[in-house]
Amino acid sequence: MFLRGDVEPVDQKKYLEDSSKPKCVRPLIEYQACVKRVEGDETREKHCTGQYFDYWHCIDRAVAPKLFDKLK
Image (cartoon, rainbow, N blue to C red; front, side, top):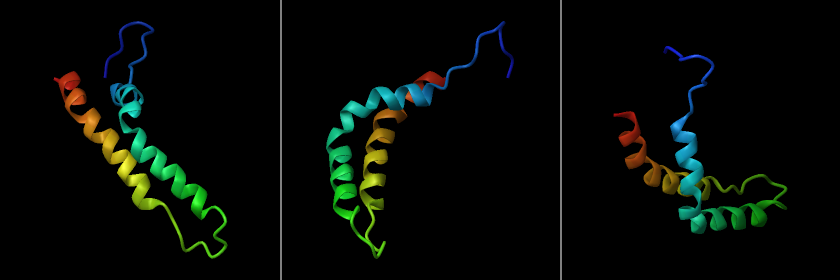
């Protein structure tokens, strides 16, 4: 990749993820509620992996169309 002057390239995906997070409040709240529920689990058997992936799936669905438009 060639850079023009001192301009650093901007990661469009990161920018789009940050701007899409408000659209995914419900999965985020569900993930945070799960984290609070399992904090006291001393057996370490409970986890919130499903809710974590649900949250990021929502963000990815919101970002994908915009990201591919930026890459064209």
